[in-house]
Amino acid sequence: MPFRNDIVRAQRRAFLGQSASGLLGTIALQWLTERESRGADRTAIIGPHHSPKAERIVCLFQNGGPSQMDLFDEKPELAKLSGMPYPGQSKVETLSPSASGNLLGSPFKFRPYGQCGMRLSEIIPHIAGIADDITLVRSMTTESVCHETALRIAHSGHPLATDRPALGSWLTYGLGSANHDLPAFVVLPDPGGLPINGTLNWSAGWLPAQHQGTPFSVGDTSAPVLNLRTPDRIPSAARARQLQLVSRLNQEQAARFPENTDLEARLRDFETAARMQAAVPGAVDLAQETEETRKLYGLDQPATQAYGSRCLLARRLIERGVRFVGVYLKGQPWDTHADNANATKGVAAGIDQPSAALVRDLKQRGLLDTTLVVWMGEFGRTPVSQGANGRDHSRRGFSLWLAGGGMKPGYTHGTTDDFGYESVTDVVSMHDLHATLLHALGLDHQRLVFDHDGRQETLTEPDLTKAKVVPELLA
Image (cartoon, rainbow, N blue to C red; front, side, top):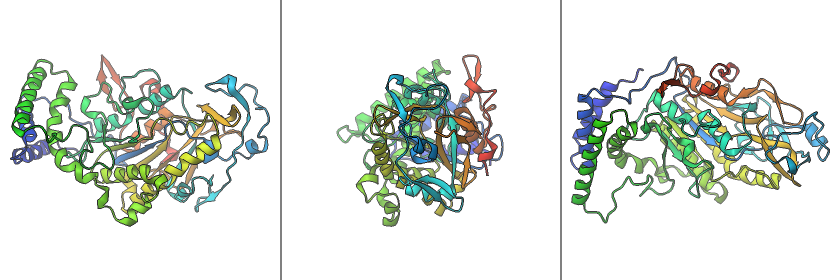
């Protein structure tokens, strides 16, 4: 159904006008009325270009680069020749060439799972248990072996620019939100710290600022969003005068500089905040879930409690109409430069059950068909050792998986060479992945454009002529 801005505006006015005790709502109503009288609506969405399979995305981003040959891409030849020199004509490309050693086979056993017979590692038994629901891509490539650069490519499509919008921002710009009580793009970072590149991973870049990701904290229902709740120590009358002054100054500036989307987003935030004050506490309250559901996500186990909480909250948010939810880990835990086997096994123990639980939970609630789950890192690992037993960064071949949202279940796409180093068949670039994800949500990556500095920008702009939808991934 087309997104009706006139209906939404009327609903917002009614909500805010009825909010007798909400100062933020009063200010937001005043701004909204004046804004509509000026005929300004830079927040209008584009809408889908074709009938979508998916309506929303949950991205379980695996910071650091998971080791494909230890998780998803079994390599018997690599295991057979482990400890021998790499036999290729040229050396393996690495971040630290001087530390490269001989071939390093995986110590983990693989076996077939599900009716599809997908061969997966023993250290991800829960993900293996949903083999018939996932689309495994074993032939990914990217353009850099540097975390910062590869993360920019994975999120915004560009290796160099630091001011480009993230995928979640493009989706909300193209499709808007299905719930105006919550942000369209929500981020669930690890409470222990941000990933590499920090907030750049969910930046709106030069898109209107309201399309940036909004971080939520997990487990703190009193303050799940920073600066949303007025501190108790501030009297209500003083807060009222402060907000009225800020609103007046912002409106004056917005009238002088109508092209400034930061100002417009700041004013729009009054309206969003008024709604969020009521909606957010209930959305983040995991205590409302049944004990069975909490156990499904591993909230009863120390190893999986933190990540499981974020995956469960992601499901609660998409149930409420949030368009894009990004779930992140602290730092780069998959960056296994030393003791790769134990380090990989340790990270897998924390994310395996919650990742699979999200897919299972969405499926049993009838939400998986319209929710696209993306499990990915910025690159993979090398088939040769770094030092004695680590693995360095590798961009030429790695794995990720997708589930739901019109993807082909129980399907394995592409191959790497005998050592898991180079993608050799049905190669998928990051730009191809972006084009395919947008396609699943009804958006044409070549038509989803934004005028910026005299150019029509797109998510796949750096490789617009080559980026392609991968039809084999689609059901």
